Length: 369
Image 1 (spheres, rainbow, N blue to C red):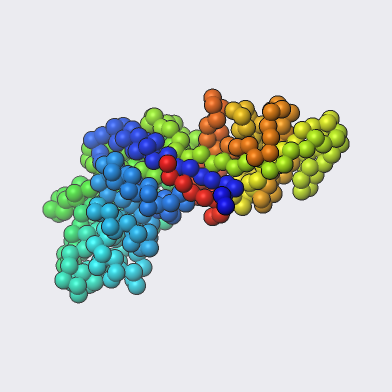
Image 2 (cartoon, rainbow, N blue to C red):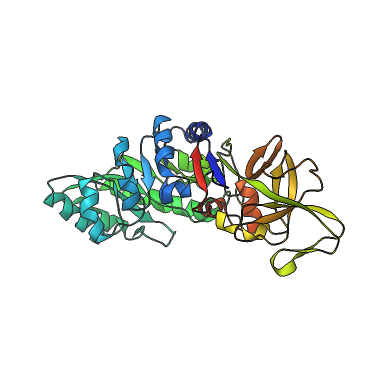
């Protein structure tokens, strides 16, 4: 029995996007960010494809994600904080850990010493994100204390931007100044880092200086999937890797004055050929597409009419008279020359591409091609 809704991930396009990011970010290396099961797409095959394409290391958000990728033979790095009861196992598996405070450094140090191991760590600097990390103004003294702890290989220093989607953001520039001042202060104490990184996908596109000296590593997530935050610019040539498709389940000709869907938000003004499509918000379609979005059938853009429900949506088929029950419906992706992008949904919903991709429903079949 086939799944009604299928999400196809094109691994060759994924690899091409990785290469495009690497060329733009050069001389920096590119670390794919595959947190949240690669944004819900299925991390195993995606990680393997990216390592095959040359990714030197992979970033995730938490320990469970890290353990799934330890077999790949490249460093697996946690970007977020680490809980005390997670440290011992992460040290045992050689996961690269974040240090967000002196206390976290002491716990990681103690676990490494107890296991007779050296734990590789990156210090997370809060230069204005306000979420986690060592405050830049407190960093010089704390770095001195952390550097004195045994069992630690302090490999990197990094920060994160809240406004990198704004081209020419003055606050991003302030963050860079703060970061570089900490790097200089650390160097004066004899503490140098193998990796310095700040750029996420948005910064790669909107703040090119984050791909230049002293930085030598960038972090890339959403761009690898061919999507980006439409609030900013795009300097990396990307292609979408996703196709979300389903099928027509019923076609009827409804009379004028017929209300359609919950809330009767649409009413036919004349006799209309209406198709029922077997996909709804449980599959990840934003409710905001109701009466505003469209789908692709036979290479033509067909408007969604009425409110999207959990399992179904309805469309106006007057422009596609040859459509029949069982036909393919493209929800995201290309059909001939027509295309619906993740950014299109994000714009209608008033959100960003991350939200759209992460919201694709659990019953949707993921297929790598």
